[in-house]
Amino acid sequence: MSFDERLHTIIKQYEELERKISDPGSLSGQDFARMSKEYSDRGEVIGTIREYLSAKAEQESLKEMLTDPEMKEVAEEELAAMEKKIPELEYAIKIALLPKDEADEKNAILEVRAGTGGEEAALFAASLFRMYQRYAENKGWKFEILDISDTGIGGYKEASASITGRGVFARLKFESGVHRVQRVPATESSGRIHTSAATVAVLPEAEEVDVHINESDLRIDVYRSSGPGGQSVNTTDSAVRITHIPTGTVVAMQDEKSQHKNKAKAMKVLRSRIYENRRAKIDAERSAERKGQVGSGDRSERIRTYNFPQGRVSDHRINLTLYKIDEIINHGELDDIIEPLIAEDQSQKLSEGN
Image 1 (cartoon, one colour):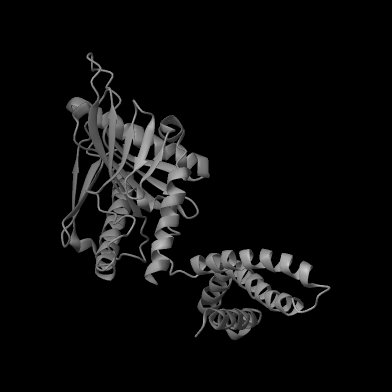
Image 2 (tube, rainbow, N blue to C red):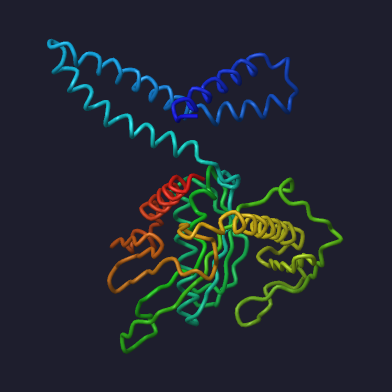
């Protein structure tokens, strides 16, 4: 089937969906909801497809006009514009028809951990966490802190948050990996540049329908929360550690004074980690032949360097360097990195025919 024939088939399928949902009495509630969502999801690309097919038809008409001496000049001019427009529409359609990652529309769990570099790494982890918080604010997303383990002097050993909004995971999924910083620490008297690192993990937030967890598979421990230096945060056993025995996944949460709230947050993170591990396994099997993927989501992969003396941020996966470190780190202006990552991923999928 040619590309154009495939597009005509998609339009027929769309029109059939339109006919069915216009008579909801003939459908079950579940079918109506599913078809309505499919109809809505396809609406935008259908407009582009119709514009493309219309442009192709007009292109043929213009070619016929070239044989008319009186119309030739006008036809040539319009044909040149049309022949530029058609490939752009074709590319937009191919991108829109790429298989969707089922998790793209999900909310996300963000986890940031200090890596090598001691206190400087913890300070960098805190900077990254705030960077994502500002990015979420810029996008109009809700950023809910789940847990922070701080060092007492502004650094974070680890921190996690739930980010809620439209298409959150689609935009943040390439952030997983090792982020490296090169800068002169405030405590460094000789002005030497130090290199330290933090690990970022972005997980699609799983619903109960995505991952069913049996209570019998859980070991739940409660203990007293402790802050920096081990001092008591509160005097009740409100901190919760949940272990999923079959997978060995462990989540601890102590941010809330309520044991019930800490357990609910821990379950949210646990479910998301198990879901992401399953996705990663399936993706690894599916993409064993894909050598050039933008990001595997591997937390050990060094993906980006933030060099403060030079004011630059470099993403190593797509050889992108931007000299706007203040805007990125302090104002959360991440779109200039995220957009090229998404575009590169789409381009690779197109070239692989996936």
